[in-house]
Amino acid sequence: MKKILVTGGLGYIGSHTAVELQLEGYEVIIIDDLSNSNQQVVDGITTITGLVPTFVKLDLKDKTAVSDFFNRYSGIEGIIHFAASKAVGESVQRPLLYYENNITALVYLLQEVEKHQISNFIFSSSCTVYGEADQLPITEQAPIKVAMSPYGNTKQIGEEIIQDTCKISSVLKAISLRYFNPIGAHESAAIGELPLGVPQNLLPFITQTAIGKREQLTVFGDTYDTPDGTCVRDYIHVVDLAKAHVIALNRLINNQNTSSYEFFNLGTGKGSSVLEVIQSFERVSGVKLNCKIGERREGDVTAIFADTKKANEILGWKAEKTLDEATLSAWNWEQKINRS
Ligand code: UD1
Image (cartoon, rainbow, N blue to C red; front, side, top):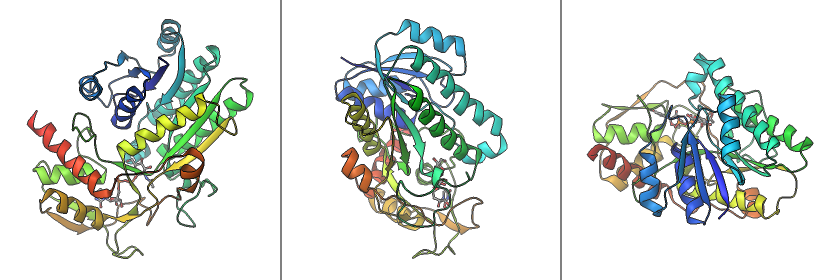
């Protein structure tokens, strides 16, 4: 079995990807510092697949520990790098924390990749690299604009660091995957999103309001230039997203890539407004949400959704699940974590 290292593998997207990797026959080694996750996620992964991933608690900012890890675990065939901080607002308040967590850690990881001549590297990037788009849907040719937050900047810089490393490496091939808005949970409700504190993202806020943990959902503005006045995003089911990572990894392992560094948008291609997401949730859950229209949130873009042609035709991946499936799985997960 080929060994794949998943950094941040107990996090939201990392854990769903660990599952898909195991189902595809890969041996999964997870490293995670548990800063925004918990070790019980290992049990969730095992419940779904019947296979126990290797878990090593490790902080990627600890250079010696990273080096020791790679000396101990030899024969790693590929790496999927999720470990990073991801809250846009927090990154504005604490930029240096974000540069340390997202950039320093990446550099240490790539130094080991070079040293151990590991060939296959997948990077967790974001549609935030495009900033405020001039044209929708967004293709991969869209210009990379000045980042709108330190978080977004770490994704831009991260991609550049990887690309520069690919240029000088004789073995390294990498793919950056630019996610749109991941939502939902595994259909088993054994794993899902576990936001700490008050959720910043729409779906966890909706499900926590529905279950009674939050009193009211505020829709951030209804005067945008969109059909119903609320912001439009491309919401993609996390399981579809996880599957794209396995496909990207297979592409590298089978040498199907056309250059040593590639990047793809991962979205559904369909934009949904905040109100449409709320309606979807209410339809599948049968719960009427307590919500109000509030002020715009600073930094929000009006609309963003993916052109999926490159991912569909070149990567050979397409999102399959619907918005209703995603909102229902998020609701099942919220109910499950409240029972346990
Ligand atoms: C942003 C980033 C994304 C990043 C993510 C992580 C962009 C384009 N996207 O996504 O790269 O990974 O943050 O946090 O920069 N909303 C409400 N009420 C709420 C919460 C959200 O109305 O209580 C609305 C927002 O205004 C937005 C939509 O829901 O229109 C989605 O918001 P959110 O889930 O926070 O994601 P983004 O801001 O799109």
